[in-house]
Picture 1 (tube, rainbow, N blue to C red):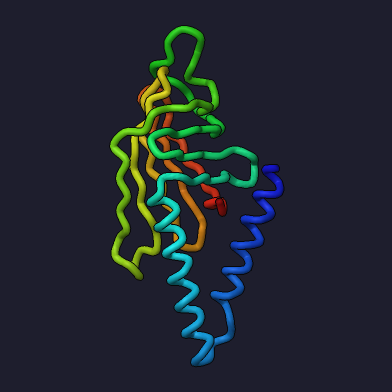
Picture 2 (cartoon, rainbow, N blue to C red):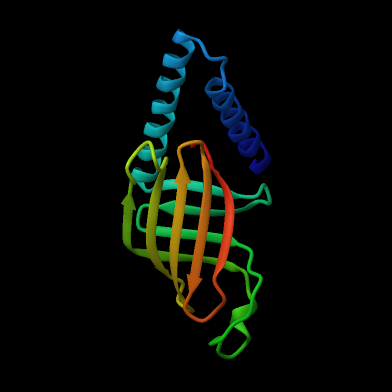
Length: 161
């Protein structure tokens, strides 16, 4: 199922990329601008709905946002500074938590072609600050800052729902 979603996502991204790279002629430039606008609207609507999934590096790891809940299935490579009993600082970032302080900023377009998302999540063991950048071409970057562990960064793609 994950492979089918990845294939569908990659197909859509390559199709959109192909449309964006059409040879430059008067009518093709207008179509390309229209396609870019459609991609922009899709990303803004998807992250604005607060129902989206970001697949990390085709590894099966992902970050899922469902309104006021986040499901994190992200790998963790680092150390813990305040891990408590049981060495919780060395676990993957696998948790379901409540989202607070969710904000989206769309920097001035066309300079920054992305949605800049920030939120906090509480897993019960730790509090995480997320900074997610979703570009209008579907690429995404995730920065996670746990309270008691080393910050982590990931890159991936926004999945088509």
